[in-house]
Length: 124
Image (cartoon, rainbow, N blue to C red):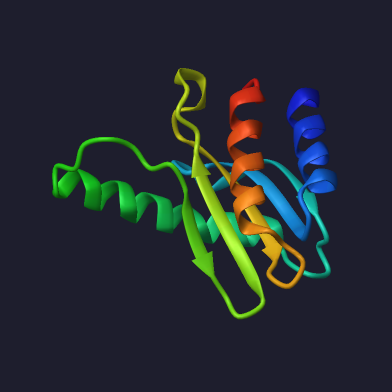
């Protein structure tokens, strides 16, 4: 767990505009690790709610018999970006990274790149 906490902490400090980040189990909706400003956003509640988004997309892909996997999903709000990135490694099956950004301060392209790097470095 310490490595996860360290990785999330590094992401919060190195991604411009980061409000909160979580590692989430989308089968249960539970956050395994979270970090962020709880006054700006209840990251646990947001992560739990977004498990439905991930599940719905996976079901739709299965129903349509689409090949490949989800790289990431972006939800754009008027003041925030919400990035959901399912983990693709064998150990990360059933998990996703959830990052919330302040839209005015964030660079979306760099945030997506950093989230991909975090996934590659993360030991679950």
